[in-house]
Structures are given as structure tokens and as C-alpha cells.
Length: 294
Image (cartoon, rainbow, N blue to C red; front, side, top):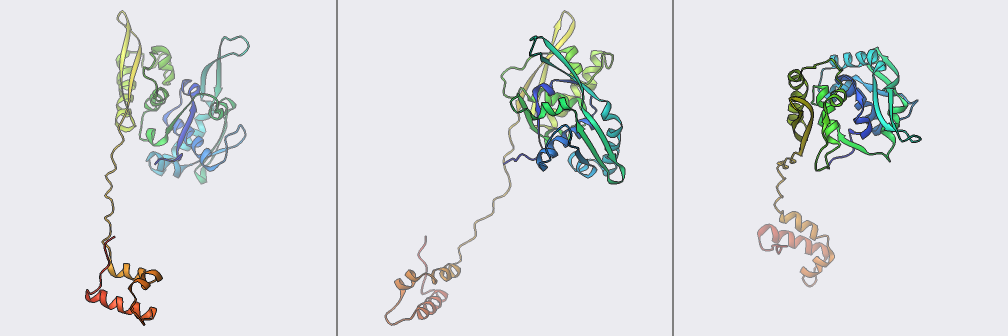
């Protein structure tokens, strides 16, 4: 049975945001949020969240050297990363575009291989407001993925896990959600080979879901994609069950010899309690006395 260990929780609105985090940065944000929940640190706009290199190394199966580099690189780049999400303005009921940094502060302790980040207010709001629609998944599902596009696609699709039919992802916005700029991998053949097909392959191989996609066209131009999603069957538990130990008559008898009712039942006239115990032991060893099967 699974516990809440390494459970990633995000609002659907944050998952649908336009972002260009690298794979390393995505992983660090996952670890920061997961560990804050598990350690009881709490997630606020002024509490530093700590990520250690050895934790990163073990979770994502990379060397310590690679983990050191990841933390140091994130200390250099993460502060400048932004995301954009869309919501409805409460006063005008019009669409509102919100742009925010992911973190408001980054600190790195080189000698300790320790990264500290403070999440920006918009991020804290989207991972702590329990009244919103949230998506939950275990970090073990995305940890083996080596493509940032695969992690982003997994998150985008997993929020629709309980829905019979997934919506169409309009191409331009879909590219932005995966972290691509307007001019990056613009040719469809490049987009499919280096982004979409790669992400689908990694998700199908390493995660708990199987996905496929269908492209939609306006004339000869691809305008978007729809996906189908199936939950993989959980593997059967093939752990050999321990064999039941054969009953040991002597051990069973020793237990019964402490039971006064048992002794009274088998005592002979004039025998003391010790006499009954001694006689029954001798008879059991010579086969004259056997316990009735239970």
C-alpha cells in the first residue's frame, strides 16, 4: 500500500501554465515541494525550502557529481525563470494573464552541496489552496524521465486521468506549455521527433500510464493533438509467501501443560500438577500420548 511519501501535488492551473523550466529545474521544484510536505516545514512565501545533492542523486539515479552540478546550475538560472497562467478576473469576469517568477530567492552553499529556495507568492498559492482542482502523482513516476518535455506532457495528461475524453491541445499553446519558444523546433517533423514522440515513448516505458495521440488538421496544416490515456495494470505480487511451519507437538504440549484445565482433564488420581506434566511429557516422547488435531 502506497503512502504519501514523494507525492507531488499541484493545482491544475499551475500544471497548465506556460513555462520553460529545464529538466533539472523541474526536478528541483518537485523535490522542494515534496520534502517540505513530508518534513512538516510548510510552504510559505518566506520559508526557505532545502534540497540536498544526495537527495537529488538518489531520487533521480544520477551521480553525486551530477547532483552537485544540478544544484549549482539551478542557483544560477532558477531565479530568472518565469511562468504564465491564465485565470478569470473576479471583478470584470475577463481572462486575466498572470506572469510570475517561480522563486523569489535562491541560495547555494557550495561546501555543503545544499540549495535553498523561497517560492514566489503565485506558486505558493497554487500548491497550497486545497479548494482548487489539484493533480497528484508520485515522484517515482517522473523520476526516470530524462526529457523535460516528457515530464511536462505527463503532468498535462495525468490531470485528465478520470475523464472519459481528453480535450484537444491547440498546437501553438501546447508548444508553449511544453516549454518551446515560437521559433524553436518550428518544423513539425522536428517537433514530433525531438519533442512529442520522444515524450510519448518515455512516458509509455517508464510511467504508470500508456498514451497515444491523434493529430488534427485544417486542410494540410496540423492545428492540434488529442491524446488517449490508459492506466497500466498493476503488476501482480509475485513475492513468495512464507510457508507455514509444521506444528511441533512437543512445543504445543509445553504450552498446554501451563493450562490448568488441560492438566485437570488428563490427571490421574493422586497425581500432583508436576506429576501430570512429567508423565505427559514422557508419554509424548514415547508416542503413548498424542495431541488431538485442531
